[in-house]
Length: 496
Image (cartoon, rainbow, N blue to C red; front, side, top):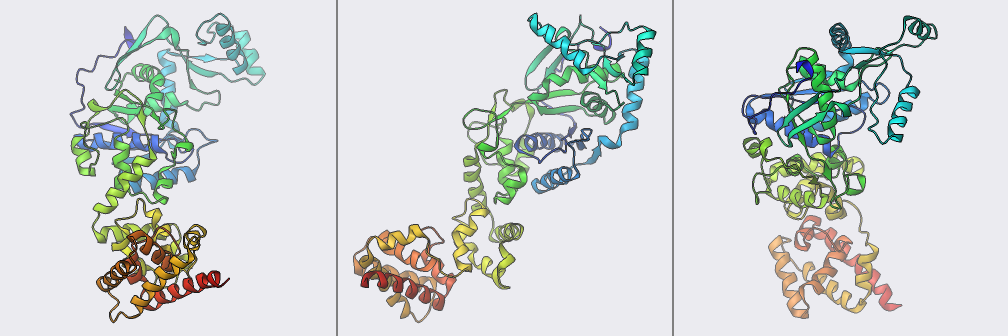
């Protein structure tokens, strides 16, 4: 069937040989969940097969592409640990390659000059819709020399459209979706070069895939409609199209298209919220892929070993921020103390935690590691859990309400704790725990009724590091001072 005929079917359902894959984001915004998942799947295929991961920046959208977005994408990939073997290549630097390809398409006679204005082409679409037909446009190829001369005289320049053979069809054997057939009657004569000579996305992407010898294109299923056009261009240039795997869309827990309301933040937003790369990669890997019905935690090495496109689902994937939080907490607890300390201090540095702290703040953070490690869901929870240690006592309104609800009982609990702590010869964790537990039994209180007032008196919060560890972290003098301050406020209420 010539250059627009069917692609030979792909027999294998798994990629087994060394694969040359690419991640090709447009630097028009931050790297979000969907793009990061695509990058990860490509990276895993490259690493699993001993292949090559190519990074290509599709920055031909001059108005929307920015250096800031490009820098953010590179930072996000580096934070995730998705290192690339070749690139980053920028389409903006490859104009000569595209011009040469457009010249070859012109010489082959598969593209033609389209002199119609955008308004005229839209009128074609409207007419087709009115007749209940697909809004497929095709330019005229029978302009006279006189008409063309008139267009040139008025300053009009043609776009160049690829002439789709309407009697044909393009078939791909997609690794995820199986055989997909595209009837050419439903594909318009698409533009490959704009009237200013710049290439369109479908031209540039196809030329790059051919020029960079990409063997497999793994991308979101929203690109499926672009596939036959890119296949046509590649085959018209005398090349063999890569194999394709179109991965499912990502939805929120409500089964609607993923958006900011689902917490679908950028990768750097997730980083700044205190998620760690290993947990993020783990969750992203499970967006449309699974190894079995029970395994949910994987190290990066395990993902490289086990990942394959044959187990990618056709069904939409669900991104649930709550599940990421749970998994992130597990990863934090599995870290060694040294690894956790590096991650925690790095996060606090990044969010400016130390900006208004004294020189000893970093050492104090490291002292808190045993107390916070088992309680954190994200590193971003540190301020709420242990921030009290770095500021004067401030009792939160809801915590004060707990004490004020029964002033007499609160005074008895806090006063009893203070009295026992004042008599301690050694302010150690075991000694603190022993005397407070003893006082709890003497008062006949339940654990919460006695220990919650202690926590509030010391930290000003209902949720914090464990009370025994908190007292040890604050030290004898600071702890006793905070207890006395709280008792003083309670006494003022009692007297009044």
